[in-house]
Image 1 (cartoon, rainbow, N blue to C red):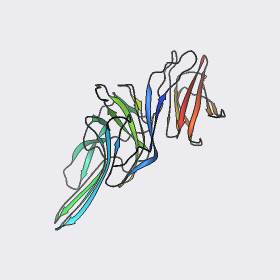
Image 2: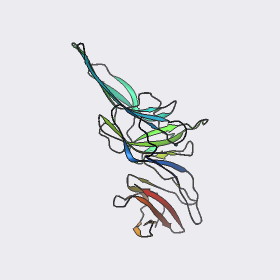
Image 3: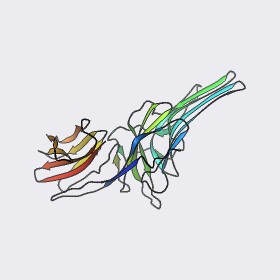
Image 4: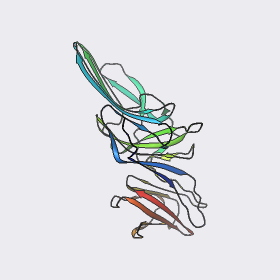
Length: 288
């Protein structure tokens, strides 16, 4: 079992509106894993979304092979498994077999940055397999079969949508886990987050809360070294400062989605100031 006690850095990320409006609506609980955790063959990692109590999900890498008495087998299975009755956001997937028969099961969906994770999504399941990737082979004499399943092989920095219940709750909390599966023998876990307000959706990769101000409508969050701003106001500006007060970005916002590349930024906290005709909103963001 991988021990992450020294790797976890948890942030309670609360948007802070200023001046006349200041309508904070939600709170994202974000956990960074430093350094990223590689789960190699026959290792298991427990994911505790709120870093307290028992784990809600288990990520497991299982491998075995054998040759004996004319038979041979390979069992290669990478999984994201809900603990108890928690669930992942799934997609129906065909299990590819070497025979003419086929079947289907739900496997974790591969989500991209900004994909929605919430009650409006259809395919939530507590399927105990939770297959990210599977390759099972067996041969005995002239009989053999090969089963393959899962959508995650060779995926880099993708997101699994999850939902879970706090003890005693009856309303889901929605979240994401960021994973890479570079090959059939390794799962890399990067970070995870969830919306602390039960029943409220979250975007894949979202680490800061959506904020709605009276008379305004915009969303702001960071994901994969990009700052995403959804803006409905005219003549809006964004200014980004480092913690020393140096102005790093000064640009006008388009109406709709704006994506600002932060790859040239040194990791750390930055102050984002959104200027409107009749107000200013200030937010602190973390760039990894």
